[in-house]
Length: 87
Image (cartoon, rainbow, N blue to C red; front, side):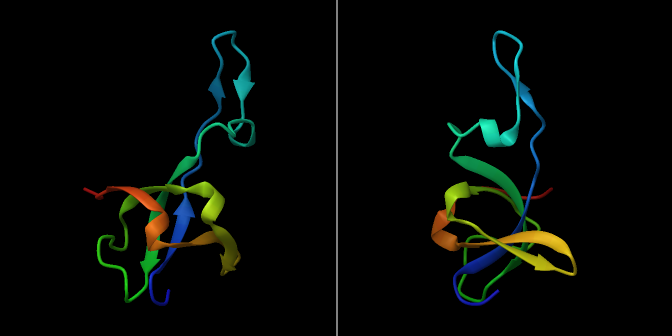
């Protein structure tokens, strides 16, 4: 990654259910703005996040890329809202 960009791998959330028992997939949960991901690589301008950190980011701000046929996403540092350090 270059500058203030991060390459992340989204952590897929399991299906959730409503109070009535209906299962909701990730795409049906449009009311949730933020998603969890693991940081794959940070750019040289990123200060508060390290490779391997678990983060929450604004999912509407990511751009999908493929590295070795694996899906990743690129986001800017300012789209990270929570950093949970990996233990």
